[in-house]
Length: 185
Image (cartoon, rainbow, N blue to C red; front, side, top):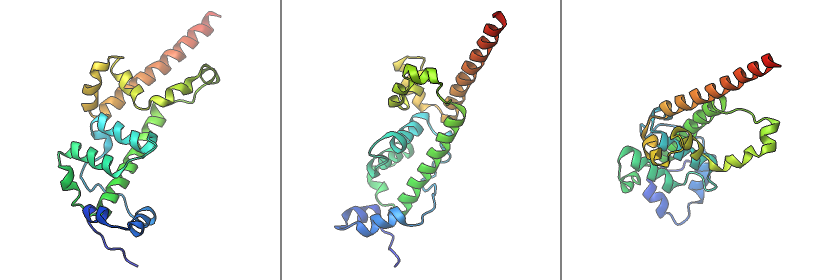
């Protein structure tokens, strides 16, 4: 059975969305950059971190409303105009966002993260996981809350590079200090 593509307005007007919800969840859709946002590494840091937060950390996930709100801000499009897009096109765009967040997660995991040591776990490093992207804003702002909004406007790639530089520098300093410690003993 082929399910007819309808606009988002038509979808929300349906009395029974069961068939569409099932099709959206289990149908075979390819991710597509419907709104021509491009790679997330080229987008504003705040936008990327907001989408990442909704997809990865938020218990509600990336809801339709949040998706529309974020696209509206990024592309300067009225929310009501977004509702004229087809439900399947919007779904493909959401899948594209998920794919791009996967790329961001992999980059951050591979280049910014490290496995916690036994000492770090014992000291309670896990307590910081509840802060989500706030930790990265804080690091980039040097603890100055007044700089957060400016950091959100910077390209993700620039912020990532700075975070990677800081991570590499911390790793170097730790290794260098270990060498000095061993040399003095």
